[in-house]
Image 1 (tube, rainbow, N blue to C red):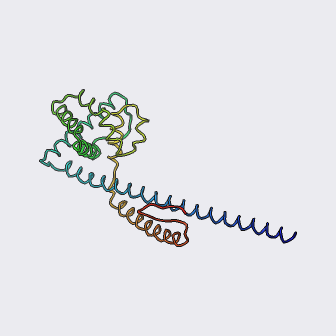
Image 2 (spheres, rainbow, N blue to C red):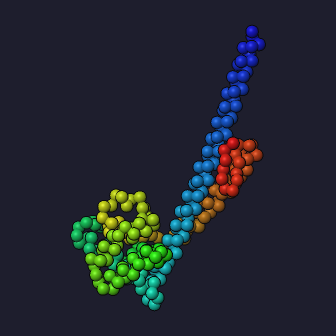
Length: 229
């Protein structure tokens, strides 16, 4: 009788231990999945920073000197129109900000990004042509309509704080908010280097921990995918 009770208790502890180890294994695997996702997010952030840094450099060159290329002229014209849109919104009292919009590179960066993205598709090329035509003809109504079009705003919302777009009812105000944010953009070189180093450290740590868990039989790793065992 005592033997049976002893065996029952021993079996209970064995099952509990197995369950605990299994749970610990799943927790470790879940941690690795989270860590892998974080590394992906960091790399995406790095790519965005690198692109903005390149565009910031180009924008300063366009702003600080006369560059005789078609793209540069289009960027300069669109940037000027964006600044005029900002002034119009402020005059209407629909965009109340106690900060200067002009004098920076925000509108130039945004214009450069927009033109590059628009020219990458047939629809975008058509919109670009219409926008440049309206700008050259000083057709303010047409410029405002094109800048507020779903196509332009869809492209713009992919750059920065796209989630905030739903909070801003006026699409032109969204564009100007974006210009102000880009205007405040500082040199990202140090941030980029720091993030590159952090990603490298995270990847080394990830690889070492992954190898440990693989040797323990808790995870499998195949073509970049973690499988919990």
